[in-house]
Length: 464
Ligand code: GAL
Image 1 (cartoon, helix red, strand yellow):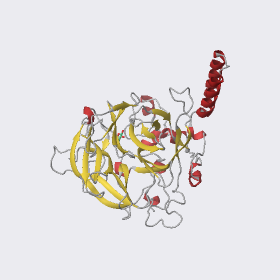
Image 2: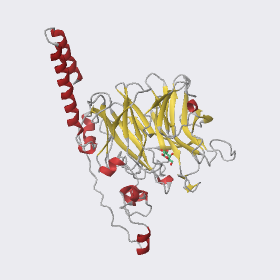
Image 3: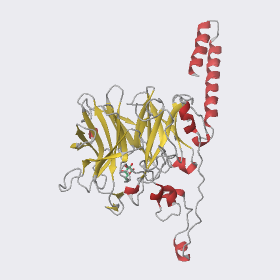
Image 4: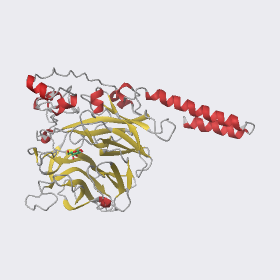
């Protein structure tokens, strides 16, 4: 579209015989057409109704089918006439049901152990299928404990490592109004060749049992650990959110190991660039420069800045991005030179609407493109399929195709939080007009497709 516009303008200007008013009117006409085109693309703004099927890979087209969900709300529960008088009744929402431990819909969000995915047993027809929300067992038959996690691909061993919060302890409230929590146990690590069968490699960074002043003392907070490999130093470097039980320390922690399976040595924590840092991630770019991205200033904005060459600290360069947008849980990826990011809103363990963002430079400016979720139903799309972003893994051999990793938190029993992995495809024009481009799309559309069950396409056979 923009190529055609350029061609028209070149012709108009090089013609010489055109009057100025003809040029101006041509320009105005072009802009109106472009604007109408982009308006036509927007439709009603809910991505679930739009289906563009834009993957570059025929193998992924099947995953772009829109899968609808039809949830019947249970009949309202009986209340005593006195209770009804005291508090007028507000209609129950599906989020209330999700958060209610006694909801009749509980099993839909948190299916029980009978339906667990067991890669050691599900060999036949169900082999390799992801079932978002079901219990997922490791090769020892235990539920995977890698919440708020991320994945590292180790080139040497051609193995994937999944790191995350090991939360297999009781959930309690440290403060009356504080968030539900589990004491720090450590960072769990799982290895896999096929991204489906995961072997428990143990706790690679453990809680501190006795020293109360230590960052990793069990009553503190360790969240969203991410690991990258430094090609220059040959070290595996872990960054994580470190906090106290009130979330007032708002810092990042750094740990390092010679091996992907640890043990990691904990180095220190700090407030990056002297700013609060809560939800965070790190991103290693193609040129080997790595970046820290964190929610700051009461989660009202994100900050991004390069790490030092050894990845053990931040440098003093930082940019504020998505200022005033109140986003967290950032998950970054790159496609054809463009940076993309999925974020969530800030509602603690309760699910909310995801947004996709894009930028030409990782340091910004970043543009918000809209909700990437497709399928399910409106509530599914407005709650990121009842989950929160944590990481995006590229599927090797299929540029533009990714796995979106999210956590379906269970605030009543955090250890029983589930994983929601879904196909994410970059392709086709974005359907949300951006601020400064007269409303026509600049970036490719990012879509996350709901599937009750799905697997990576034929042709993906783990690692070659
Ligand atoms: C969320 C955040 C989680 C955890 C939780 C605690 O907003 O994304 O990582 O910190 O709050 O309530």
